Image (cartoon, rainbow, N blue to C red; front, side, top):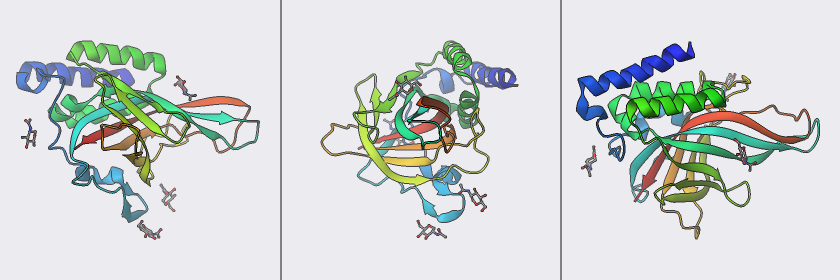
Length: 237
Ligand SMILES: *[C@@H]1O[C@H](CO)[C@@H](O)[C@H](O)[C@H]1NC(C)=O
Ligand SMILES: *[C@@H]1O[C@H](CO)[C@@H](O)[C@H](O)[C@H]1NC(C)=O
Ligand SMILES: *[C@@H]1O[C@H](CO)[C@@H](O)[C@H](O)[C@H]1NC(C)=O
Ligand SMILES: *[C@@H]1O[C@H](CO)[C@@H](O)[C@H](O)[C@H]1NC(C)=O
């Protein structure tokens, strides 16, 4: 089923190349500034409280310049069996989805869903394959945690960077992919920069999350990694 969808998406892309050369001829540096976060209302609003939503981007935060798919793991450390898991950062590769979004938003969303449902090896092959078929410069950077586990960081290959903290959080909507363990999707977030850390990106939204949630209690000591994916929207002034 995954592979049927996968090929549907890949073919969507391939046929778009044939049918509409302008849509897929340029796969990097697409201008996404016209795409509105407000159009993804369900992803930025608390499913049980419609007045609780992620703060919209401010004028000072500027314009959306990149939409990326982040694929990786949310990490936790466990001291002992029965203890509470402690956040131990996260690691994700960022794939450029800006052009796919502009060309076919449904394909981009389907790719996001699929990414979260695949085991890492399959995902690696899938990403290489779509990259080759669509001629996309997919990996644009990485997401990790800097220093402690309270500073989410994003570093792009081209030098743009972000080091920040959580400025808004709402639960993922019902129907989000609950991960390979079925325990749920991590919340939607707004992140804003921490002063003095050299961020060139003004704000980051994490939306359309899938997976990444672990059990409430540890089963044994060690580092736990829970696969997740999310769309990351990056703004700059
Ligand atoms: C990018 O798109 C926006 C809105 O779609 C448009 O107003 C702007 O002029 C475009 N910028 C460039 C550099 O093409
Ligand atoms: C809903 O969210 C608003 C805004 O965050 C908050 O003021 C209000 O208390 C929330 N309502 C409930 C029932 O939690
Ligand atoms: C989190 O897990 C990833 C594997 O997905 C690993 O590469 C990374 O080093 C881990 N980070 C921490 C802080 O444990
Ligand atoms: C929303 O409320 C329903 C019904 O009380 C509950 O089952 C669900 O877990 C809540 N969802 C979130 C994201 O809090």
